[in-house]
Length: 149
Image (cartoon, rainbow, N blue to C red; front, side):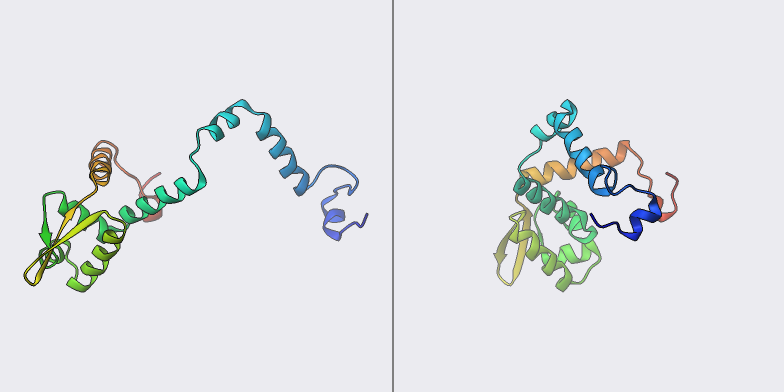
């Protein structure tokens, strides 16, 4: 067995079962027999479902899109009015709405030259309401903004 200089410097006996690879192996063995880990794994959704949830949450995580969705909680609005409400250009607003439309979160309706949008997905409305309730009851602290942890 070859001994690397890193092993010699670290004082690791290359013949022993100690080292970075064995720590990972030991953790994998411990995880596989730990009932708490088994229970947690059994209750995880499939990886594809986790990715889908992450996609939905990322839609809500961008401030401009979130502002548009919050504005639509009150009812249907045209792109011009949404842009004014959000303080963004009509172009940026249309772009955000296109993404929300692609994910079937909002639905458009044309009336003459104007396009109106409404919040289509009741689950997203529920998420928005829940997030607003949460933030009203739980003041957030942002360490990255210099606010206390």
